Each structure stands twice: as structure tokens, then as C-alpha cells.
Image 1 (tube, rainbow, N blue to C red):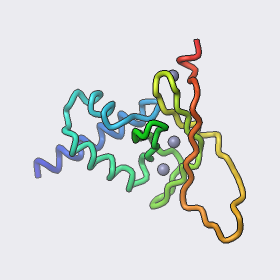
Image 2: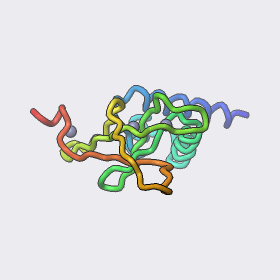
Image 3: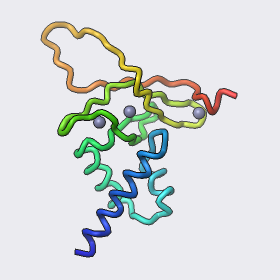
Length: 128
Ligand SMILES: [Zn+2]
Ligand SMILES: [Zn+2]
Ligand SMILES: [Zn+2]
């Protein structure tokens, strides 16, 4: 019973953290920002649960690090995160460009399940 309460709190904290971050967060960054309140395994479980619940989506950065960002218009049981992600080569931040959604036509008989569109470059913070 007590364990369940603690996990629920961890879930709320992690979701709040990701929702307020303004950019995608990696597992390590989440752990650091929680001041090591949760162990790796708990965070891993909570992140997977939040992805299943369409609250956050996974983004694999150009260096292979998995980042997590809040979902905005995902339907229940269906992710709809086809927007572009921007990866800064200087500060390594990953940002959702929610309003930029590439469209293209696949050849006949190809059915798309997910799309991963990543642009690498220099973010506004590093452009100075
Ligand atoms: Zn989503
Ligand atoms: Zn940057
Ligand atoms: Zn995104």
C-alpha cells in the first residue's frame, strides 16, 4: 500500500517535470532533476508507463540517447507525435517542434506506423 503511494507520487513528479521542461529530457536528466529521489528502476518503469498512457513520447537523439517529451494531442491508446524534433549539436537539447509536421506520400502498399523526423543543428540558446 505504501509502495503504491510512493510510485504514484513519483509518476506525478516525473510527468510534471517533463511537462514543464520546455525540451525533451533524458533518463539521466530526469534522475538529476528529481535530486535522486527515485532510483533508476523506478524512473524507468514510470517512463514506460507514461509512454503507454500517451502522456509522453520517446525521442531517440542523433547520439542514440533516448529523450522523453510531453504529448499534446495524442488520442487515447494512440500516439500522434509526427512533429519534427530538433537536436542541438552544441547543448545536446532536444526540442519538439509541435507545429512542424512533414507530410509525404508513401508508395502503394506501404503502411506507416510511426515516423521519426529529427533535425540536427543549432538551437536559439546556442545561436548567440
Ligand atoms: Zn504521444
Ligand atoms: Zn543548444
Ligand atoms: Zn515531440
